Amino acid sequence: MSFNELGLSPHILRAVKELGYEQPTPIQQQAIPAILAGQDVLGGAQTGTGKTAGFTLPMLHRLLANHGRGGRRQVRALVLTPTRELAAQVGESIIKYAHHLPFRTLIAYGGVSIKPNLDAIKLGVDILVATPGRLLDLLTQGALTLTQLEVLVLDEADRMLDMGFITDIRRIMKALPDTRQTLLFSATFSSDIKALADDLLREPTLIEVDPSNTAADQVTQRIIQVDRERRRELLSHMIGRGNWQRVLVFVRTKQIADRLAQQMQKDGLNTVAIHGDKSQGARNRALADFREGKVRVLVATDIAARGLDIDQLPHVINFELPQMAEDYIHRIGRTGRAGRGGEAISLVSQDELGQLKDIEALIGQSLQVEILDGYEPSGKPSRQTLPGSKPVQNPPRARGHANAKGGKGKPAAGKGKSEGSKKPAPARKREVVGEDIGFTPMRRLPKAQRGDFQDNSNEE
Image (tube, rainbow, N blue to C red; front, side, top):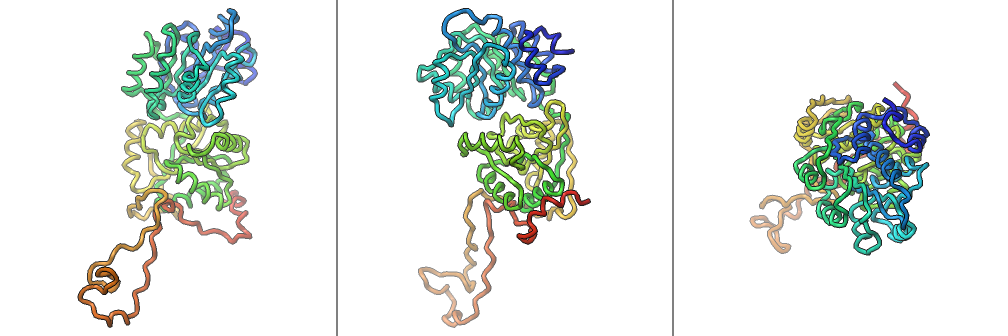
């Protein structure tokens, strides 16, 4: 099947051809006819399946059919996304697909000034791509009305619920007309998603190309067991040895993201971190540099990386397994997109083997655990501490020990003054905890030779 057979406008087909798309993906083949027919759609789709074009192309076609009815431009299509990055990605895609159409598209999200949004709305907007928080701001200020809305899209609805947006979504629904077409897309179909779909959709067409909990077929998944304290060393080694030029690394927390980026920068790998504490401008610059190859390694938390669509991303690394097994699917879906191959590597410590079992149960697949020469796990449980913890002092000695204190500067009970003349026991090495876990320094080359770290990758 070709795009020409789907009944789309010649102007849309022209843009599709210019973008180099030849054949629709499976979800596009099913979603486009249903949406063109005006049906509500409940779509189960992983990232990288082409779902954005799957709902955008027929949406544009329907808007074009009713365009030019007169009056001031008002929002006729609304796409809600859970994160700023996904809003930007979807909005950019819509602008490309609508290149030959007379529509104005606005991308609105928090973290940046609201004034450009207000100015754009005054000029008139046909298509609005927004995060729930920024949309509520615009509605509350009276800058925007949605009474003329024809199409509502909830993209990655499962993530919106995970992030606690259900109350915001229900507030937004009150501002929408009852007569509209609603399209809901989700990577997983939990009971909460089904309940939301029951509230919002009317006799929807169910489209589920890939089983909701199956990882992308094009992704090679590897599990490498390594001590938590040596994960960063192994990560830098693999990137340098393999001469990987574009790597996305997932971590759980903002603190670990910053710490890991700093350490890898010291290893000679150009690395930046993105997370919720970074300004939107900083995040946009980091993503742009990563896409352009100026940055080799991007370290990201799950929320910050949600919706990233980066062409030719061959390697995704789970520096830590996600807290929720479902996030594993979203993470590895960053590679192997649009039919391209990719590799997802998870660095798993002894204490994460239970989480690995949960992931295997979710994806219905057993994942073989590898052990690399020189990085064999010790078998000892890794220390579990919170990022940012201060180094702990040695614990108090048992009563009667030479260093035990008996109270306000007095010698311990049962010890004479002559004890003070004894040679003190050597100080025990402090235990560094918190952010340093997993960041044991590598056996690094002398500074003068450090640049060779990346150049030795062609050695066998």
